[in-house]
Image (cartoon, rainbow, N blue to C red; front, side):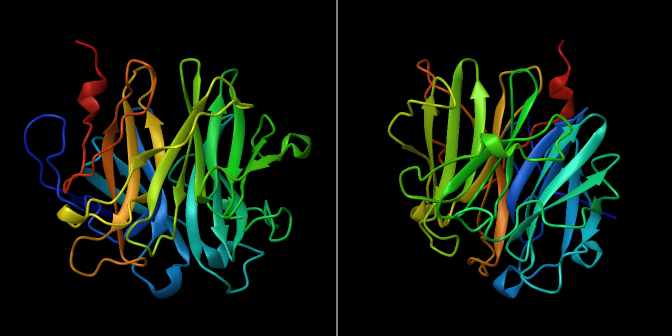
Length: 309
């Protein structure tokens, strides 16, 4: 277990260093459980994204972090040394935590009694290569009203399907797919009030112009509005390849946070040396997502802000 922090100043805002995790990381999934933030992500900084382990990062403020190993691919029965450990995401169901993750270009599933593990992987891939007309990577979770969970995934084509109530099975008769605009990968959905928002990454993670677009609709069946830019590179600031994000709502509040990765700003940054940062996400009066203007620093949200005076 490792503990580390980024220096910050003042109240909640963007006072953090550029890389608050102090590591190369990518593909964030940020969830709040109780009064703690838990971040699941790809360990980066290796050629061809070849990490073979997953870690969870725990924090009370998006600033001070504890890192714990939760799953090694050597513990995954169906992994035989192929492609690495990518893009985990978490679903909490019936007192258990379910991790969906990518290994060898397939989506796996592992279960644990809590967010820090230990996770035990299923014996077979949850979504295997060839099951659907896409590369099955980049899973994400959406839970709709009525506590109905969905899994999203895909590269080249986006897929979404309902999960069983316990999160352990895919409801095959619910699978739907689409290719939104210039979709590449990392499809995710969230809901605010009566509006659904889909957002995704365009271009390639090694492309400095990797970026995030969004669309909205009154239901998951649409109609979806014309896609808009949510986050894009700011070349003047040296902020490049802003993509593969997640969107998190602080429970019980209308406070929204987007986590995304970009080329690390330490002089080594490229498609295999990436950093994760956080930013506030705002909405216009008409419900439109307000474009996020990338900052050199990262956003922090201290736990005491969850306490109502």
